[in-house]
Length: 335
Image (cartoon, rainbow, N blue to C red; front, side, top):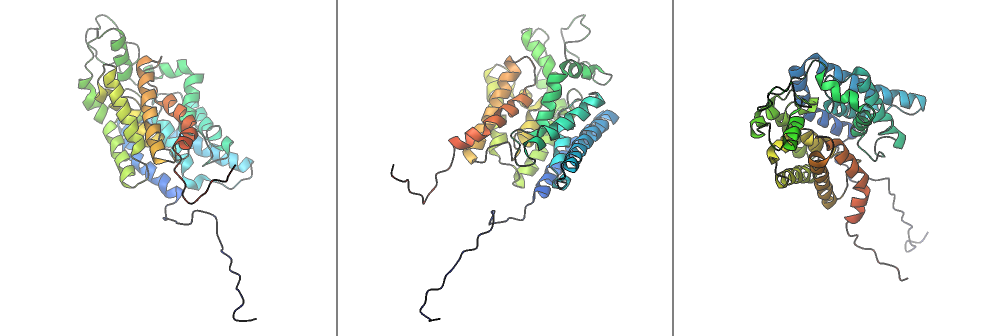
């Protein structure tokens, strides 16, 4: 062979990603669990065995469903990626502690089976699995879920100007605020006085509503670690606060109350069901906040976090198409 003969060169290209940061799916999921741990542990301390039972049932149902599905389908077990664990923890934190045990089990099954695995598993689901499970049980057993707060755990809030009423419909602060709003402020429910219990020890609502301060702490951890993008929680919380003010209510109360912080930091930021583009994430977060505020003030339920995020999950692919970055180096072919 002549020294001047051309030498064939072939580029060997492997499957992406070509730049690896060392971050794994399991590592990300464990960080999410660690960020949720302070709020979850405080909920168990504050609410006792009912909270522990709810975590055990939700997590056990989620893990068991994924293991059984993979076994029946003869697929490799995927429990080690941690996604089912995160789903179980988030599902438990979105439920009242006195929710009947069988509803918690059904919610965990639906979250994993219909929220994730039926789409093909992690990375293919269109909607946040934990919210799919919660939405299913809310729609299917609305009456049972509505009476769950009165099953020996929740106490009626002390509201001025209620006269001889035994209680105002609904035991949560959001429900009382909604009733007061509907009555034109006749109950005199002071929203500013609710800041402290909402921040540190709120015993009315779901497990994820016990301490807003600990949820923010967990969210900051995820932001510092670069696990979530600041655009989604900033857009979500900002839109919720501004619209609450525009609707004539206390923006701080409406951000702290309900599932806004849990949704903004831990649910709306789900990698698979949220947009991939930076501008798209900001628009997506704002959309979640707008729908949450509109649902809270003009919907039939005082809490609208679940359906606000699920609706925006469905729009995430369209948002990504709208904000698709410009591709350089390509030339359009002539017609």
